[in-house]
Every structure is written in structure tokens, then in C-alpha cells.
Length: 146
Ligand SMILES: Nc1nc(O)c(N)c(N[C@@H]2O[C@H](COP(=O)(O)O)[C@@H](O)[C@H]2O)n1
Image (cartoon, rainbow, N blue to C red; front, side):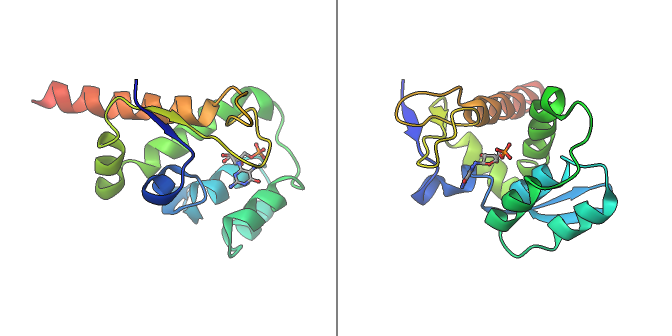
């Protein structure tokens, strides 16, 4: 099976750090990373601060310091999936995701994240798995409509 390993270069659009406007409860976030990190808290003031941060790296850092909502660990995958569904509703991004065909999407990373990605060959690759799920969902809708 073909594998897309590492979301860089022509596949950088798969990264949560890439620009993609996401709206959650009326708030505009410039990337999935901003939106995901903001969803860690129910505190609207903290969410607003994250929404306004200039880079996804800063949003991620801010997300480590928010008042964590109860049960976050159990809901984080659902939240990530919801954000990715919104991101890939955008026609250009949807087409680029579909163009990856049936390639395995692997968030191979250098930042030692073995939950959302794979580091040095080991990891759950949950981001990659959720991206493949969104790709399947889009394809299923297209096939139904055909
Ligand atoms: N580009 C990048 N740099 C890092 O340092 C990262 N940790 C990531 N991973 C992304 O971070 C999000 C998860 O954040 P939490 O660890 O749950 O706070 C998720 O979007 C990963 O893809 N990326």
C-alpha cells in the first residue's frame, strides 16, 4: 500500500498547523490546531485568546495552559474528528484529500508525539487514522450521490 509519511511539502495541507478557517460556536479559528486547542476549555475568554494567537504553535502552547474541560481525554478524538470534518468541507482541501487515494496517511513527526502521530516508527497515528476516516466519509457521500 502507498504511504504518505510526514505531512510536509505537497502534503503539508494534511497538517493541523496549515491555514484552514474553522468556525466553532461563532468563533473563527485560523487553523485546526487553534480550534482544537481552544476546545480543550469551556472558558470562552480562554478560547478567544487562542483564536487570536498568530501561529498554531502558539495556540498549541496556550492549549497546555487552559482550564481543561471535564472529560477532555475521553472526548478529544471526537473533537479532532469534528474539526477535520469542517476543514475538509472546503472544496479545494476536500479534493486534495481525495487525491491521496487509498494511501496510508501517517503523521510521522520529529516532536515525539506518539499519540496523534508516529515518532521513530512507533505511535498510534490517531491524526492519520482520523484523516483516513474523513476521506472515507467524503468518498461514501460522493458514491451515494453518483
Ligand atoms: N507541528 C506540530 N508540532 C508539535 O510540537 C506538535 N505536538 C504537533 N502535534 C499536534 O498537536 C496537536 C495535539 O496537541 P495536544 O498534544 O493534544 O495538546 C495535534 O494537532 C497534533 O497533530 N504538531
